[in-house]
Image (cartoon, rainbow, N blue to C red; front, side):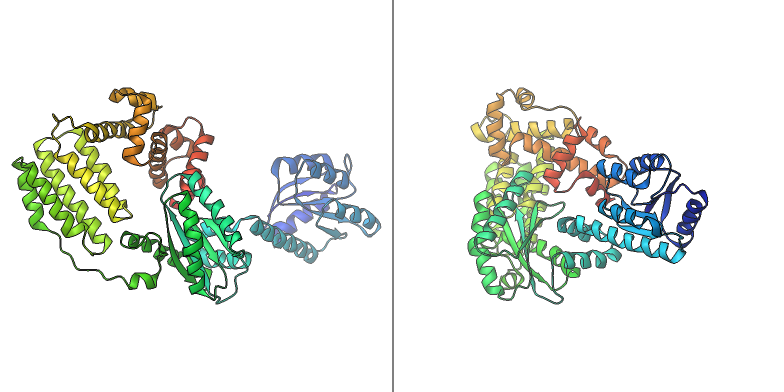
Amino acid sequence: MRIVVVEDEPKTRQGLIKIIQKYTPHEVVAGECDGIKGLEAVTALLPDALIADINMPEMDGLTMLEKIRKRGIRTATVILTGYSEFDYAKRALKLEAVEYLLKPLNVEDIIEVLERINEKLTKTKVEMVSPEQLIFSMLTCEETEQENYAKQLEERLLLRQDSRNALILIKTGSMLGETVNEMQDALNQCLDSIGLTACHVFRLPFEQMLLMMIPDSQNVHYLREIIQMKVMPEMKKIGKCYMAYGEIKSMMELKPVLEQMQEYFEYSFVLDENKLIAADVIEMITFSDIRYPDNLEQRIRRDIRNGNKAAVQYLAGEYHKQVIESDAKPHYIKEYTVRFMMRVMEAMRSLKPDQEMDVLHRYMLDHIMEATTKEELSDTFWKLTEALCRDKTEKAEVTDTDNGMILRVIEYIRTHYNKDISLPEAAELVGITPEYLSKLFAKEMGINFSTFLGDFRISMAKRMFSTGKYKIYEVAEAVGFHDTKYFNKVFKSIVGVSPSEYRRAVS
């Protein structure tokens, strides 16, 4: 603790300071001789504890304490008093002085009082930390600190030892913080309406995910059915989402179980989107073996070089049947598709290198790996195939306009994100009206222009934070935010935690 000592008698003041320094781990940050100086020290230093005599010149201890409380300072206070002044000590207790020491002082009493104050302050600090903050600490701390946070969480959430606690992990399909907040509010209302009032709902760091914890879950089959039939439909009214189920008996299991549950979302690729994903559900899925189609890759690269577009389209269709429509594990389907399309683009780039091809390479392939359903992957695959096969001289209506214009706008954002960028400016770049660009962008990307720009800037900010080299205001300026407060607000709405919390977690 940081302590201020206010005592007009020099020998008593110095003796008290020496005892604290020699026999306790606490730090004396100021030693003053009267109430006026004591008031100034407490106001300036905001210590954890104040030890003050009652009778002092200039301003007595009780008057000083009254002024401290009027300034809204809740520093824990120990009053020094003699037996003849005990009535004053009672008055001090009404002013929220938590302890008193009777003169003459002895070492044991001082140590005991400071230990009690320290315990109360520690307990108060823990209670002020929300369970959501404790979960953030639990998921980002060193392994040696996990047991401490686990114990605090179990106490705060009233979890019994070895009880069966159900976890529902909800992955949203939106990067918008506002959408996640809306889902969290709707989730709480839904749980209340169906009588699951003992649940805890938390927003997790880094990803747009919500965690629902249901303590002492006995009838698991009934619980899962309720979540699937009642809760999931309400969430889907707000936006796309997927839900995974898991269990823990101790908060020490939380981090590894959550990591496992996040892997479950990969199987949304082959499961009914309205189904709760759990380990037993995944075990029932039968996957077929699949090998990368080298022959198709060689043939399509040859036909690209020969300019045979019809053959390229046909071979892309064959790949789609053999890989994307197969019953192989999602990981292999995505990995093979990215590999196949990269080879196709390499062949195409050797014939007509241009900037648009590089944008396709960087952006569309990310969409393939992030696809949550076969339909999404298939759609991206065919968009990419058509864009690669299209001749620059062709003016096919919507396809050329959508891909060409939007990709030029994306490339402009990638190279100018640290400057002021507006929708009208981007529209002027590609020669269309802002209104038309807004519609095209939302149709092609599934997200509006301003949201994409914000997401991209925050993704660059996260990269800078991960280096551990930059301060928050430096990152804000570097990614195009001139107001650090606004940057903090946008960062938290997208990432789920503040920039300072994120920087501590990744550095």
